[in-house]
Image (cartoon, rainbow, N blue to C red):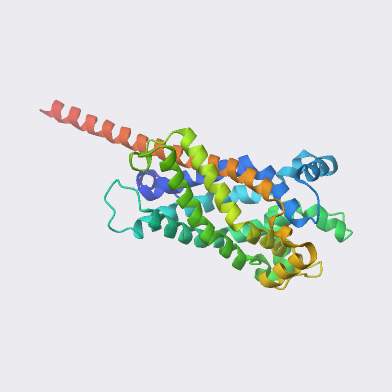
Length: 319
């Protein structure tokens, strides 16, 4: 994609680039906790600290960052699309909005739902590869294999060879069920909490770093608690490999078998780790996004001021 001056001068371009900055910052901040969350969801027992000790002792600290390249390479683009889609849709759902005014909370929710549905198409295959990498050692032990795929491309190729495109799309439906409503709640919580923490900031755009961090963190926590049971089911569905006997035939089947064998608590396994990660990651995401957006708009204003000043100087010299 061309990030030339014309692209960056448009509001679309600014939203896109700022979303990418936020997504990258979020991945770097939260991937180790995400690895712990996935391990907890896929295990039948064990606390977060117990799993952490076991992973570090048996696989080394670098194992906490296994699978990070897949989301790092794609989440920047995915988050950029999500934030840009949200900005566009929230404006579209509030057509009578005045210039400079923030969209209504109803438009925020609807825009978030639409953005969540769209991003599901992008993130589902990425999360599939990430989950397979994060659980790679455990899967190899079950299959009595010592070899491992070296990275996300190897995993993606092996899935395509063995399962075809259907395998790559495994979990797409439940990803959409998870992300659509939760993103509506996500953006609404951020906008609402931002206004509560610093009244008037939605309109004047002068929120502080503290406001962005807290509102973003609370938005992440709220949306994750809301969708967490679906995320547990999604992890188990996407963790299935063709080499192992498939345990689940769909979302409902996965739910029934998990609850029957492990109780309802299984749907909340790893929630503490997920909540901690959600607060850190989403606080960072929104802060990086808003800061990048603010910098680009300030640069645009400064550039416009310089151009105006130069034009005045040229006119004066001609006179």
